[in-house]
Each structure stands twice: as structure tokens, then as C-alpha cells.
Image 1 (cartoon, rainbow, N blue to C red):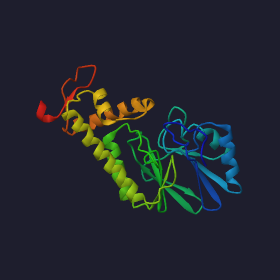
Image 2: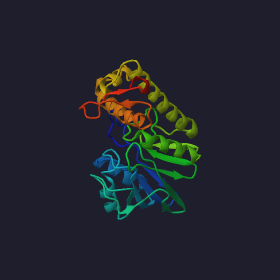
Image 3: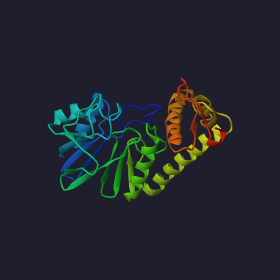
Image 4: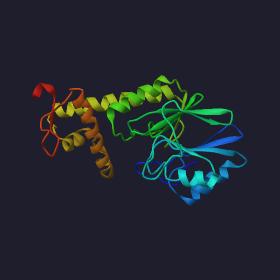
Amino acid sequence: MLAPNPGPYTGPGTNTYLIHDGEQAAILDPGPVIDSHLAAIEQSLGELVPAAVIVSHNHPDHAPLANPLAQRLGIPSYGFAPGPDFTPDMMIVDGSTITVGSGELIAVHTPGHTWDHMCFLVGSELYTGDHIMEGSTVIIEDAAAYFDSLYRVLSLGAERLRPGHGDTIEDAAAAITEYIDHRHERERQIVAAVAAGAHVPAAITEAVYVGIPPELIPAAAAQVQVQLEKLISENRLVLTSPSSAEMHVVVPDER
């Protein structure tokens, strides 16, 4: 089910999934509090017995409806940690299983987009939340953790991805590999921009994210900052002004 919350960061809207075995059902990522979406979720249940409301991460386009929906249906909510708009009844960790009728969801901790992000493996399908989206890359808050999480989900051997935004991705391995390759290429672009004379985040953003819409520039600048932190930690770039109000970096040979 598609929540009616389209936007520059949500694409067509948030995907809410009804995962069931024909008798019991779990609702994954019910999204923001929107009455029409709540009604659509309840209607889609039909004769299915609801068993769980599950949240992939604490972002306002995924989590706020979880507690009201769980209370309304009289079932527990599940999540990695509480957030501003969601407090799970049941805390889950990497490897936790949530039983739904004859099936189960296996929780996979995938920090990077957020520290609390979880994917869920159901048979050969991986529900990816905002870890991987169809038709777009994702905003990350920790580049090193995100790389680790990409390799982690690649190792699971899932065949199909069910993302939090966009359509189903039929070739999971190809999509995850493409994400990994894209992140490596973005790092190469950042290092090349610094080597060419762009030493502060604003200049690097302008050099790397050419032609993006103006409303996405703040997000691009934030991504540069996150990726610079990883590159500095790996000594691929060197921070020359730690006490300055603005980060200034060079390639190691320019120290």
C-alpha cells in the first residue's frame, strides 16, 4: 500500500507492506499519521488476523502511525529503538525473529541511513526500508556503517528486494552491487574534486553534484560532509583545519 505522502525525499510515497501467510499478517512501515492511509490498511486486512506492526526506522515517513495502529488493532509494535514519534512495545535486535502465522521475519540491523535502521528477510525476499530504494540512492548519516550494511545484505543472498520507496526490485544482487559501486564512485569523485582544488564542503558539493535541483543541494551538502568524515578516517583525505568553523581538507600528498 502506498501512503499518500509523495515528495522530493519520499518519491511517490512510503510503501506500507502487509506480510501474511493467508491467515495472520504483519504491517511493516505504516507511515505517517494519515486517516485515509489508516483506513486503507484496515481495509486491506480483510479476514486476515493482524499480529504485529513493525517499523524499519524512526523517520517521520515510516514510523508515526505504528503506535496508533497497533493500539487500534490490539497488537504489539516492533522496532529497534524508540524515536520522536514511535515507541516499540517489543524491542528487536539483529537476528530477532518475528513470527507471523506459519512464517517469520528475520531482523537484519543495517545502520547507515540511520543508526537504528532494520531490514527484514522473509524467505528469499528482503524488505529494505530506506536502506535501498528503487530508482534512487539514499541519504546516509554514517558512510562507513552504510558500506558495511550494504555488504551485509549482499551476503544474505536475497533474490528480490521490497523497498520502502519505489517498485519491487527483482534482481537483488545486481541492485545491491550497483549501490556499492555507486558509493565507491562517489568517493572517487570527492577525492578527485579535492585534488583539483575544491577544499571545503560547499566547493566539493558544487563540483560533485552537478546540475541537481536547488531544493536538493542541502541534502547533497550533508552527504558530502558524511562522506568526508569516512575518507578522513581512512587517511584518504586529510583535515587541515580542525579548529575552523568550516572543514578544510586536502589529499595526503598536499600536506
